[in-house]
Image (tube, helix red, strand yellow):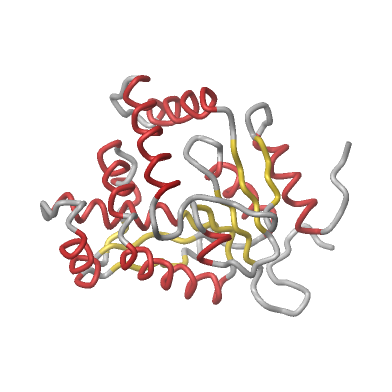
Length: 237
């Protein structure tokens, strides 16, 4: 089998689901895996963050489900295939907003609006439409359980709590965010609670997933394990 694998043996686009909580290295591993396989990388969390950005800018309360659902119905939100990078960009009302989505406030609001079932249903539809056309390495919290439950390629990444705190803190500081380590631990704990206990598509995994603890693994090792699983080969010792 060639290094790039853009379709399954039956010719349908290749779809890989990567789920897990914050700070386990999903984004890094998913981007690297997408390049290895030659399919687009899709960060589904960016779509929720885009909605959260609009919620904040329109001064809508994130816990007001009716108002948030109405907002989602009124905005132009889509995934756009980027020919240059081979990935997907989030477009909000005609603009790329990727550089405005990584603040702590947007992340916190994203976690809150993602508990609304109708919001999730609408964004899942957009994610499914994109991946069925282009294929994808898609990362999030319910990709293998809700978005593409039938894909044979499902991975759940996890890590020790203190590792997750440190990774998230380093990530935010690395992009210039003014946050404290304590603020990051509170953010992750709150998000874990909401993601695991929401009624619609909670963060979970089952026996159809390959579970990888990334605590002590370099991203390259995580990606190699996933490639071996997708190809149906034995992982190297």
